[in-house]
Length: 78
Image (cartoon, rainbow, N blue to C red; front, side):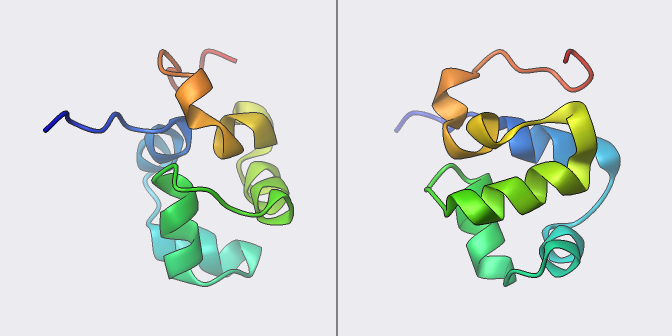
């Protein structure tokens, strides 16, 4: 079984030292929804927008919704 790559969102969250629960609460979504989004399993555009705003210019909605398009993302490269 192939190892699943870390999504840009997961890399960024971990680099910032915050938990999924903290981000989910801050943007007003439940943690299970946040987990699905961070895992690259899909999510709503509105939630991706809220998450992108939380992290500022370090990530955008496209990177959150389509993480497979950004396999080489490194925190701080934007």
